[in-house]
Image (cartoon, rainbow, N blue to C red; front, side, top):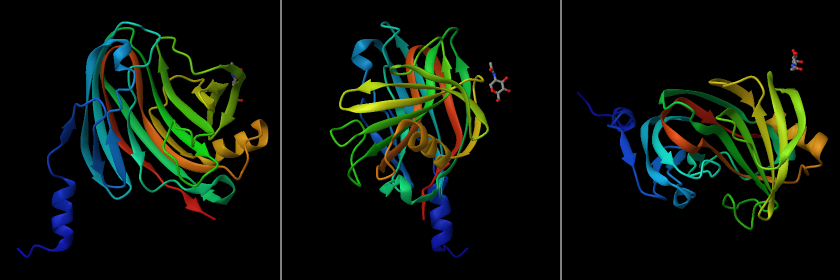
Length: 243
Ligand SMILES: *[C@@H]1O[C@H](CO)[C@@H](O)[C@H](O)[C@H]1NC(C)=O
């Protein structure tokens, strides 16, 4: 058989899964990076690993296995994928930002406390790393929040409909940026398809967020507090299409 570039690429895309275990290790995953980000690990005891299952084009599949105890109100980590491409565009210049995310808990201990969430970063500059001096806003979209955990701040709106789903909007400060969290009001949303522009426009129209803000980063992952679970993202994609 003639080994074409395409067949070499498809072999690469389906090579055996890679797992990372380090506190801040990351893996290249096509248009994404898969990162452990165990930023709150010192508030408890336990461990987490993250596995890149596959990536192809704009889609990525990955899983994470976690086991955390102590300080049940503290986030232990945010294992996530971050897009290398969906960023650097001002809110007012985005035509669409399609995303889809299907995920499943393969296993979970009773009473786990964890969210499954987008973490999206806005700032004044075209580029900036998440959770830094460059950040103006952190936009979370919680597709799941188990065990009575709460977003940053307090609820300011309940049961609003965006992208065909019901949400409670939470608002509050964190470090040098402001956090808005859209928390599912209808239980777990395990098969999510949306245009993120609907969330961005809501914040521009109702919360005074400037359309000159840049999307600096889009992450998706899970924030575990306590318990243990295996969470698999069967398929995830996000893109920003400029005007
Ligand atoms: C939330 O909003 C939806 C859609 O408007 C409505 O069907 C539902 O009854 C509302 N739920 C509550 C608890 O108000």
